[in-house]
Length: 326
Image (tube, rainbow, N blue to C red):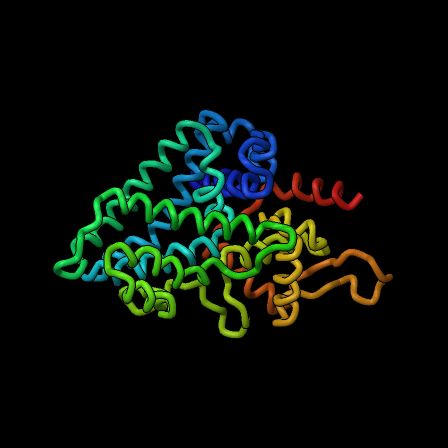
């Protein structure tokens, strides 16, 4: 139970940071979003900075769970980098709040968080630097510092895309679309211009599979029609807890920042029949009021086992829901 509460707090922290930035993060808001008491919070963390650092580590851990096995399964550096980069970009698309904390907001999180970020970057530098051993014979071997420049450039490009996705208007292209350009950037100093040019048009490798052959990608339920990503799961859970919630209320409880993104996601879920709008036929301009369909209820029941419960104490959340509608 303690681990479940801890994860709730960390996910709430990441969602709030993605919405407001590190500077505006307060313990009160974190506890309210996670649905835990002050006592529970301090049983898990010493304070705000410790919680931020742990949330960063959670993001790194979840990314590494996808990246490390994919990278280790390849014998050639180039192939390992390709699958590792693809897994990183897919992680950022599937877990946007944790991804933004790791890539964007860790830069403003204080000295401890900056040191932890630097430790993670040093691991990435070492992985990229292995490309020096794969260069063609007779080529001038780039110095080790090139790996630092390559990792820095990749992170800068990714950070720019993540900020654009949250902009007004948002850049709706998924982060995985950066794959070819980023792979070309990585390959250039180690494999040369020709290889870098070829990487621009090569598709991203397929999502890795487990040893039993099951895909690690968030897969569609048999008749869902959309990928059941972490974000989609949180939306379904929010609607399950708050039948009749508006777009804004669903977004707040699912940790989605941009109203344009939540509108499009809700529209897709309505089209495939997992949610329905209770406000249809009411006066023009009335807010949407979403509920799960019977099919949506079946899908949502499978969400908690996959992503965990996002939520707070039901009584306190119901009170907050009523206040937001008043």
